[in-house]
Length: 120
Image (tube, rainbow, N blue to C red; front, side, top):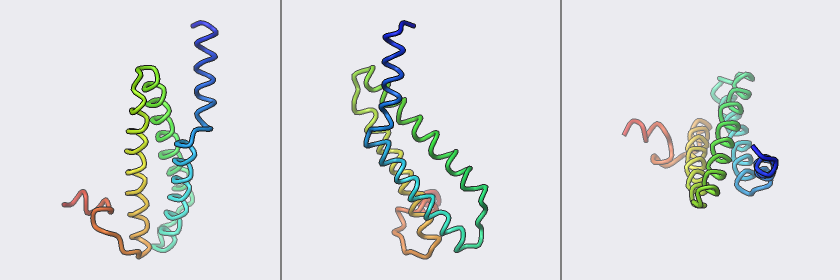
């Protein structure tokens, strides 16, 4: 692999952290962590180890999937690919947030909670 390709790859991945989508995903994940901890404390099911597991299962895969979709979309001239992946990831995060808010006693519409989606 030539130095030009290597430099382009490094520039893309280091520049990805400055993109608004990455910042938005990270902010949404942090909000989900705070609400999930509050819900776990409310229910009496809080375990500190679950926070690390949640972050490991959410931050790394979500960001990796979005960054790969962004890179593949730019290489294949399909800019819409990253936006579509971003929308799917955000919908999943909204579902997680709705589940945790319902555990706190906040009334949520049935179509937002995962339990209603999977048991319909």
